[in-house]
Amino acid sequence: MTTRTRFPSRWQDGILVLGAAVVLCASNVTVAADKTSESLAVTQSRFGKTPQGQAVERYHLTNRNGMSVDIITYGARVQAIELPDKNGKIADIALGFDDVQGYIDHADTYFGATIGRYGNRIAGGQFRLDGETYQLPQNDGPNTLHGGTQGFDKAVWAASPIETDRAVGVELTHVSPDGDMGFPGELAVTLRYTLDNDNDLRIHYSAVADQDTVINLTNHTYFNLAGAGNGTILDQVAMINADRFTPVDETLIPTGELADVAGTPMDFRTPTAIGKNIHADNQQLDYAEPKQGGYDFNWVLDTRGNLDDLAVRVSDPQSGRTVEMYTTEPGVQFYTSNFLTGSFTGKGGKTYDHWGGFTLEAQHYPDTPNQPDFPSTTLEAGDKYSQTTVYKFLPE
Ligand code: GLA
Image (tube, rainbow, N blue to C red):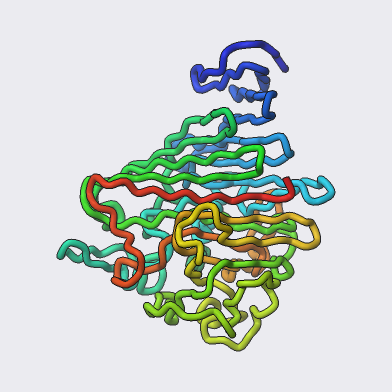
């Protein structure tokens, strides 16, 4: 059933009513709104529920270029990104699941998730702040990974739609109580995903705590520009704007050194196929994945927090699809899905191979709370944490 009407834009009982057109779907309470002037639209629907019975919502964002992004409130995740190729053929380029249970069963993939309170690893699950020692759950060998056993990826976030003159999106909020996963202070987080007609998926994070704490938020979307479940990413070509990276020990904790990428497989300063050096005989690649090697490191971005400077670009020569990353963060974790083995089924019944996707996790460096020379991740009580990261998709 389709109804067209003219009203001023407003939200009414969780339903977006925009000036140009309103589309009512007969099957459920979902209402799509189409802002025809810019062809931007946001649709809200039920995605499912957690085993505890909490409802999980999905927000479907579309633009005039045939691109769409789905965000779900379970883990504030990017659940899908549909993007045309150079011939207009659309594919979903984000790895993920069709239902909440998939995300629960394969939680260690962190597919699409918002990561908090601390992205990547904290050595020994411990840090000191203001003279106190804090102990976190050790969920990755001796270390804490991605905020501990019940990180932000497992929270059901509160959500409301966003509609501005040039973008549509969803705002998500989550309050992490004092002591959550061992971290000090209550932390209130607001996250805004927006999509515009330039194919920019913009993520803006802000947070405030009532005690001094540490914070390192990121997004853990796995991209495969050939389409999720469509082989490996080894022929896709990456450029990372970084002269240095942070080498790690065998548990993937930074040694503290900022090492030159020159002469190593970590040199992506000029566009290089991801698979070109992935098999190189290199201790760091072995630490990342002992059997076949892989990338799972933090690069020290030369963009120095400048959102206008290109941080990373990855292109698929075959499809012509490209993702660029711009960020206010000082680092990026480039991870080549070394732990995927094709052993489970993702969206649409597809399986995800070893090296079947890559992540671009804008972040402060891993283990910063134990590394006094790294840019600080301390958030003082009452101060505002802020991060903007943009994934720009081509062709437009
Ligand atoms: C990050 C880590 C990887 C891995 C993935 C999740 O990228 O650095 O080692 O744990 O998350 O599977």
